[in-house]
Image 1 (spheres, rainbow, N blue to C red):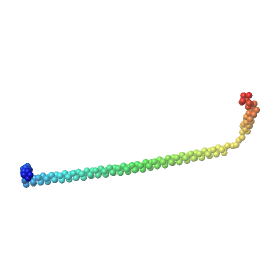
Image 2: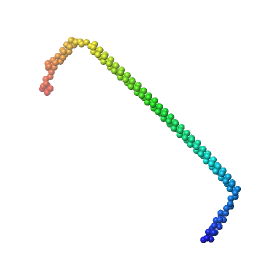
Image 3: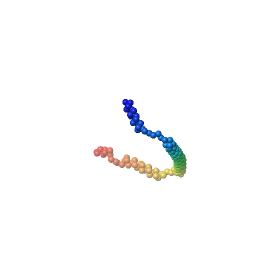
Image 4: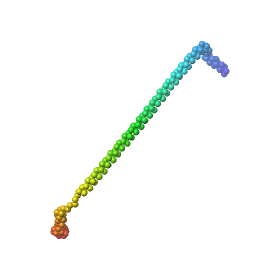
Length: 160
């Protein structure tokens, strides 16, 4: 079994036959590596600067949106106050008109009452004797017509 391991090791060692890197290659790789790191650092710095600019733009947009919201809110409040004042003014005007109308109606009623009292004072009690005589004559005549008119007898209602 050990013979097989040794055999395998020799085959593996043959396959992994690597040459030792030279010193010149190492310096060149370090320079490439430094350049790559420098490029990565530069890209990282540029990305950070871009992120900072983006955050600043987003912050500015949010601030502008908040200012616009506050301005719209303030304008809405002012418009609401103005509408409320106009409504109160209309209500006050309506109340004044209603009070004026009621006052005019009271004055008109008072004038009508005074007019009626004046007309009542102007009425003189007079008696129309001739008219009274005619009225009584008609009244008495209506009694005579019923009593002595010779109307139908009560028995005629029953067919006798």
